[in-house]
Image (cartoon, rainbow over all chains, first blue to last red; front, top):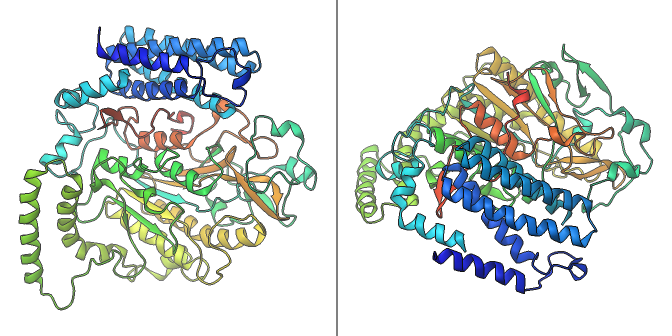
Length: 132
Length: 480
């Protein structure tokens, strides 16, 4: 197993086992995994994805976008169970779809499409963080 | 974390990483620009990614944030609602953290508006000279940004990021295209008396090699501090001293090949020697005709210093300077007005500030046009944000990052054209799909220069960084 898998798993485990509030409403949330650490990790992953898209590093694009898709699904589930912000849920759903679109485009070698989708994904992050 | 693993791979295999970016950097062939610096002149001219529409930029930062609602963005509905509380519907999705709170809607009752040119663009009576260029200007009326403080939003306007430390747009352009005139800096900054908040980080090179940062030109006959040869030193003495210095620097460089500060210093000494002649000549406006000086408003004490700066800007562009960044500053005299930041008494503030910039900018556009330079240059009217439709302290306006007007004029653009819009009272962008953020302006300017913002990259800390960060959308609708 690659050393990065351990660190990735450790990072997600850390995110899942710490209950740092992600929002002012964190006390009400059912899912303790979606917190500020996870958000920082996703932000870092997105920054790295932008770099991988710029240099068209297919393997790392696939790994980064796939990971983001999975983590965004967690965010989606979080907002779904919280049931307090329809907008955030819509953004999370859309973001998951976009992350999967990046995977699909990269697999086909369509890096321009993947890059545009990457920008779209960052815009979704920005839109959500206007609320949270 | 996988990022760490990637970082490790990239650090360990930097040569491979450099190979991976080959072809993404304009004009560098099979050597990435980052590595080319170690071998040659970092300012050597480089080819764009595709044919450019323009080859130079004049970046007019209106420091302090003018009110679009008093200059270019006419809102009859705001006039109707003036004096009333803002209808709640307009405040949807707006998080007002501005200092002044949300006051009653405000218009200056003396403001007059008219349409000009075939385009029918609206201009207020504050900018009578600019209105004559209605059909030269491309308005971006749905501009938006982040932040409500000047420092942060100015840095974002210049670098695309809220935090200091990223390269400014001018630095990216200089990195990607190099210089057109080896005797002058490729990137010049001029501020009319005062620097913007945040200071020099607004024209810094960030993580790019230091050679790409902007060079500040000061008013007066010797624009660069300490550039002139001291009177008691002869030319041969200066040459001998510089020769020795270069030998020492080059010897040190062999042990520190990646020290970009040292590379920049070596180049800057060479450049400085050439600039001792070229720079004073470039900014010497004494031979400009009286008519040209009048055109730039040099005959009026309010507009004289800004006009002088813009006339210098034209001379620099003419001599191959690629990016001229002008900070508006303030006129000589009235110390109560230092920028466009009119939290109170906007009529007085904007009366003075508009008077200061109106004729000089109109003069610059006319002058560039008559010399055939407007086709190869883009002039950008930009500000960190706009101002609110509601009043503050009676007749002032607060900061508005949600919707404001910026404009461009020059090559490759649809002339006499307005793109996007704010809502009926000028508070926020009406249609988010046509919103233009600062990094979109950057992407569009780079595109006009023949650069793909997504392929203009620099390896930093194991990551391929680009000018627009994770964002950036070329505003194709304003391009010819």
